[in-house]
Length: 125
View 1 (tube, one colour):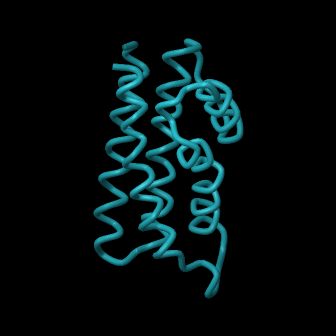
View 2: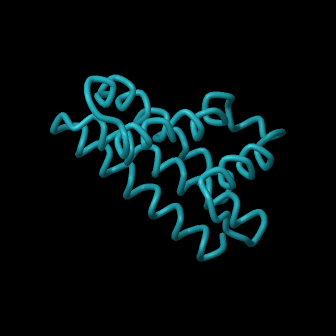
């Protein structure tokens, strides 16, 4: 594995650990954001390993990840969809106010889905 991809995976693991810790103290919005970033960094690892380039935007990571795993049977459809769904949690945490800005149930599901991104490490390792 390329060192850059390995660093992205390390960042993904850190983000997932942060999401779990943050969720444990009932900060669902922040936990959702951290969970999304864990998946985002795992996707970046795959992209760098396969293309030797880093995507520069969230949308670019989403598009390239989908393209690269399109025929990969070990990456299930839920993981393929999660980046765009998870980005919504990040956006809520960053920009929303009021009752719509509370996402604890979605954050819990996001953490579980992000944990399944270990599949990416298995693909690269």
